[in-house]
Length: 448
Image (cartoon, rainbow, N blue to C red):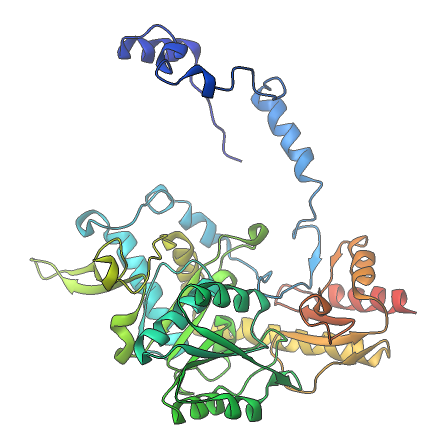
């Protein structure tokens, strides 16, 4: 916990004297009295630092935290293990307080970190170029849709209904004000229905958007989606889980044109849902349509390796009508965390994390199904998340598990009414066999 010490009365008087005024009231003399609050703030009396720390700690204990609870809830945010080195390095003040690296001569560390992040994303996704400064996975996806429509000069996109429900809503929000028509393609056995996709494709289609693994955790056939999209000269946008790419074929190998995702799972904590970390990668042909920033490598006057902002196609830097996007928040600290995480784990470490997720998820799935209280919702292959149909009401089941310090899965009926009592469970490498067996035992007992 960081401490904050306010200015003493003596310091306040010294500052007022330096400004040539006698009181704080005089400082605000230009503000008309009728727009002022004219009463004390309705706040409790001030506490000492020791009292405040004690109060906040007691308040925080009302939250269910991931140190005390085992978590099987995914649906877009995942409880992966974060090596301690990630927090130690990102907390260094030169990174922690860094602003947008406009001046390369004093921002080489930040620029290099972003460059390395871009390079690793390219290696994971199998694409030619990656950018930085995407807010999160959902907005990166919406930016990719705008980018595809700009490139193809078409205004229709087809999105799989197996795309994250919130991502679909973000896309529709962007599309509403850009004149883009969004059509959803239903699923079959948990995967995009290719028959319906083929029937919906036309010469007006700018892009097909598929999530892999999808919201149900199922591995989609990106290769077939790309083939159908390209037949109509449309682009394929793939939204991916970066950890899955350690063991799955890269989207680049499967002919995707734009690849996006959320880097929360790469060394960034869940933190009550944010901040996220979006990434975007594409082919050289679409490079100049990329939003955000691209950091490039060059040499300085002495021939030494150096880094600069190479491409900045956003409205803060160029004429608004020429900008590809107005996205501008600098997510470099989150990208640095992801970069350190991937560096520490390396290729084999990331592959091991992916395998552990895969194997543990399948173990939980099989144990639940064998109990007779849960049935598979789909038969398609999955990565670290899966859907089972529960014999009992999911919300009540989750509440019962919570009382045993287990955070259960996501009730799919909220987003997919047809999947009544559908339970979406996620299993990361952090979940132990004891935790998994405990979930099964308590869930089965509750549903008896």
